[in-house]
Length: 231
Ligand code: ATP
Image 1 (cartoon, rainbow, N blue to C red):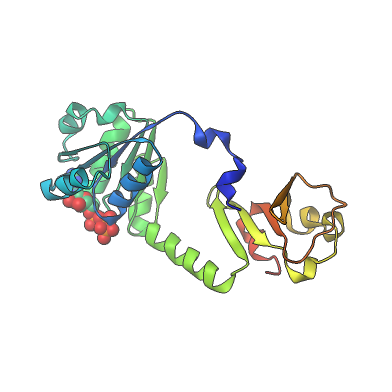
Image 2: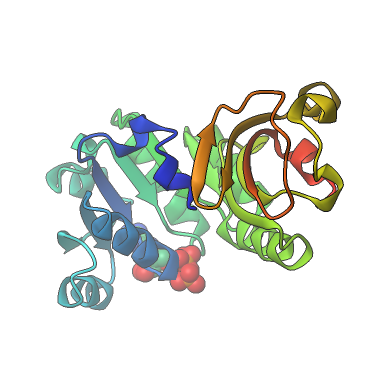
C-alpha cells in the first residue's frame, strides 16, 4: 500500500500547477525533476549558465533559463511573478536567498517555499515573507533515523510540522484487540483512517474491528503521539 494511492487528499491531484525553481543545486534540481515527472509545469532558473544547460539537456524541467534572482526586473521579465508557487532553492548563499525571497513576495507570488541551511536563515526567510521554510538536511536526518529505529513505519506523510499520517504494521501489542478497546483516540489522540489486510482496504473501520498482527493501519494525528505507539 502507498498512502498516495488512498487519494486522501484529492486537492493534491488537482489541475496542473506552475512552479518556478530558483537555484539549480542538488536540491533545486531534485525538486525540478520530481515536479516535472509528476506532470507539473516547471521552470528552472540559475545564475550559472552551466547549471541551466544541464537541466535543459537532461529534460529535468519543461523550461530553464539563466537569471540573477536578486534582480527584480530579471524575475519580472522571466514571468516568475506569475507562477503559482516559487521554490527558492538557494541554500548556501544567504544574502541571495533572502533578497530573492523578498523580491518574489513583494511582487505578490501567492506561495513561496524557501530552503534554509540554518535556523537563523530559516527565521530570516520567514521575516521576509516565505510561506514555507524547509530544512531538507534536518528532515532527511529525521527520516533516516525513523526508518532505522522504527522499521514498522512503512510510510510517513507530514501534514505540517506537528501532524502526520502514517502507514504502520499493526504492533504485536495490538493483536486481537479492537480499535475501541485500544482507545487510540483518547489515549493517544490518534484516529485510524484505514486497515489493510490481505490487500483489502477497510476505510474508516468500525471501533469493534479486531486488529490482527501483520495487518497494516493508516493513522492520523500528532507526530509526537505517533512516536509514542509501541512500534
Ligand atoms: P546542494 O547543491 O549542496 O544541495 P543547495 O541546493 O543548497 O546545495 P546551493 O549551493 O545553495 O545549492 O546553490 C544553489 C544554486 O543557486 C546554485 O546553482 C547557484 O548558482 C544558484 N544561485 C546562487 N545565487 C543565485 C542568484 N543570485 N540567482 C540565481 N541563482 C543563484
